[in-house]
Image 1 (cartoon, rainbow, N blue to C red):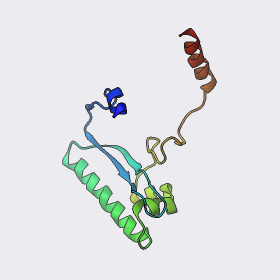
Image 2 (tube, rainbow, N blue to C red):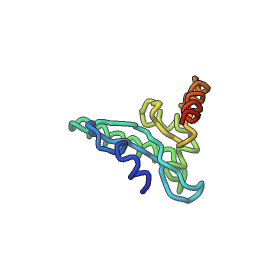
Image 3 (spheres, one colour):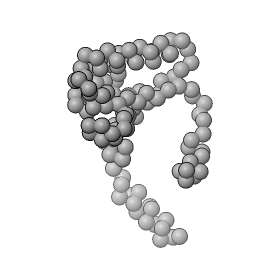
Length: 128
């Protein structure tokens, strides 16, 4: 609850209305807990066509799972086994840098200018 109390501004409702689609999350079974992978970072839900696009994505995902999953395998385990790129190709979704597969080990973290930022932080600490 501490995070919610501290970050109320970050959790405020925005003006864009839509959905974020995560797939493959689960609680323990074969390979442990998995956070769902963000397959679609944001999809607006303003028209009937937007809703139909979401339904179509769900149907493509179910069809792909039915064709590629092993017996008793779950969606997250299938994605781990075949790879996220193959899964995205199979359901017709383009890769996006806003997709999150593994929190805190996201490959899109930029490190250029890192030394300058560290120097700024150290200068602020020294001035305080």
